[in-house]
Amino acid sequence: MNKYRFIFCAIAVIAMFSLFTGCASKSYVEKEVAALDQEIQNLKTSVEENQTQITETQEDLDSVKQETEKIKVDTYKAAVLAKGKLLYTVTLSSDQTKFALGKAELSEQAKGIIDDLFNKLVRDNENVYIEIEGHTCNIGSADRNYELGMMRANAVKTYVVEHYNIPLHKISCISYGFDKPIADNNTKAGKEQNRRVVIKVLQ
Image (cartoon, rainbow, N blue to C red; front, top):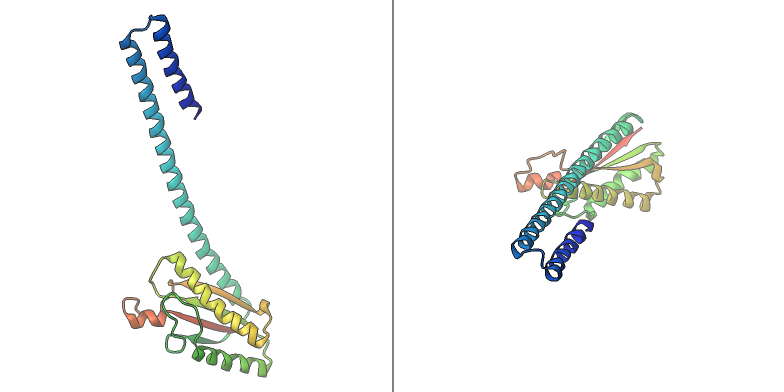
């Protein structure tokens, strides 16, 4: 901005000098103005190049963020599994939950399956750790599907906490988005199967 101000001031000075002194010819003034116009154009080009670099840097940061999230997911999974052995797994797949595209609401059928599992855990008074995985099909961006997978896992967690008084520190949620399909995402039936929640019970 200071450079532009200097340039405009210089143009004004040249114009005034030519008017009041008569020492500067018309061609001289035009030459100086043309030179200043070129400098303005050069500055404009420089600003545009800087903006392009800023945009590219932001894209690089977004890519690093995404990779970091994946590393965090893998690290978290390893930490959870290290707590103890896997006792059994319950999968709320399309046949039971019928997750609608882009939705995370639990069906009554899904709630019934959750009830069967946690009624048994409460009845047997088992000291277990629960991991809830959210999965999606491949429609949409990686970030959106990561969020959707977490929403589905949290829907199960919320239901369990509200109905079975399981301590929060004994339940964790994790999202894999569309990274771990169990069926072909090129078919409608396969997409429905991949929209699922997996409940892992660890000792």
